[in-house]
Length: 343
Image (cartoon, rainbow, N blue to C red):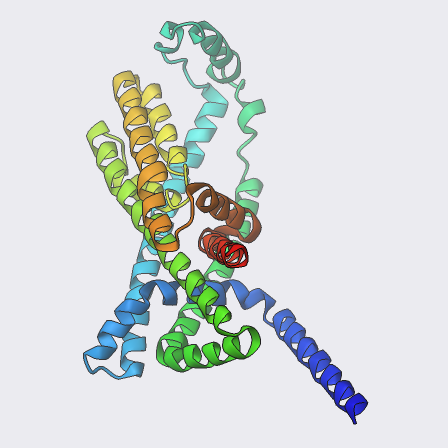
């Protein structure tokens, strides 16, 4: 009797594992959309609960929040796409002009201490003379532009597909979230006991803290540096501020934008403005990465700054952009398990 029961248990376990693996394999391409939907649902769940307490139906709340998030997520992407399309033609013409006529050496380069003459000589040899920049930039040909456009079109279609499924999954999470939470708690208690639900709560808090610490602080960086771009007289300052805010979600990512902007100012012989922009951007980024983010993320998860940083960069390396939020959640669970085992 015992042997028969053991055989049935092994068969059920094997069947369960096989079904789970088959489901993961089947949904593999949609897992990023489901992960993003989960992150967005966790981050905005207090808003969903607040609307529900006002007497609104769960379907109405889900539809309303999905529409709001769709507008918030899609409109900036549409703006970036339109701006990129508007600027693609002038950019190609500018590259062709450099290839045919060269790019004159800025006068301030030779006045830089210690390295000025070296940089000016390199610029003169590689950029200033007509045709000299061809080895650096390559030839701007119609076929290359067509291939690049086709590749970008395919990537854009893939990202839009993920976005559509993210919003669709988000609607059902908003609508059926309470029952899913109840079922998840029952499964966690059955498999791991009370500890399983507590670890899940730690992961939820970590995701919410990561959203606050990365996204909201990144947007604030974008606003501050976007204002600096306006003061410096840079063109398309609003677009540059938006790009800074997006990249600032990654620690030290905002520097990719404001350093390029500073180089543009240097080429335009606005040396003081370029130096001021780099100094201001570095101060904003330093304060955000070393004070504000650790406080927002660490206070909610009780994680030391080192583990926060490892979770962010490790998650980014392992899972891509979604790893910015999954990484701290995983580290929070690991640290909680460590503390409970050491207690």
